[in-house]
Image 1 (cartoon, one colour):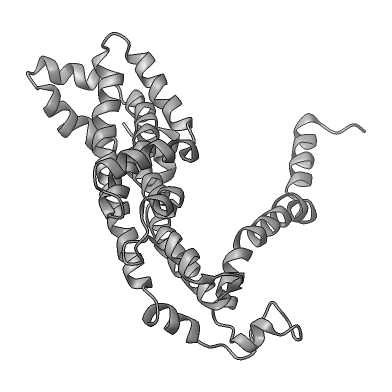
Image 2 (cartoon, one colour; image 1 turned 135 degrees about the horizontal axis):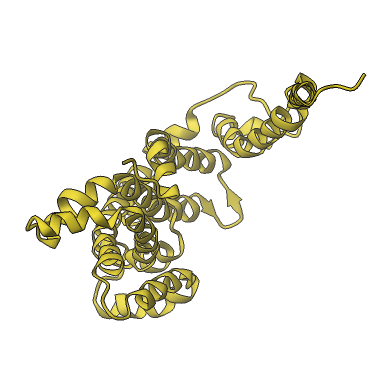
Length: 292
């Protein structure tokens, strides 16, 4: 006796939802992905609390700590300029992010809504400017920074970071502004609102997820930037976190693995916290969705 189509569908769905198949197709790949993703953080954590004797020993389990210590954190925070590096990185990243967002909002809104001649070509040029690698730009930028007398200052980083932040933020906000219904602005224009009032009172409140997404990306890029910070800054008290940890804790061929991993672990926590708090806005901003 042949089975009915409805019964065949039920059997098929039951096969797809069976526990062994779900383990193989869902849980096992997720477990592998989770291990690969979190293992570097686990390795940083255990290395930062391992005493030097365990770090240099070839005996025992390298994936576990027998006698944890906080000496590496103490050395990092009190025997180096790590707190100053952290403050420099935070200051440069926050100022660069807000300045880049302000410029990107005006640029993206003008390209998407004002419809001036050549707006599409301008948007494409801005996106192509983001594709230029910083490893090519830092040489001419170094000459500009030196001639302006900003070498070895925080302003050298604050004014050069927007060169790669503004193109990306503008491209991201252009896509988000494009998803906002133009009818809202047309109604506001009929009621007598100015472009500035439309931008501040209508567009920006609707674009909060996009702004947060662009801000997170800009802050992350600024926080982790290495080439410009290494080229434009030489004093230890002006260095940012990525450059300070690498240049000050590596002496010749001697790597202070404990303080290095402790510095990397502490430096990754602020970005992780920001992503965890704004993950919903981040996903919404990347998809360009607008709740009507």
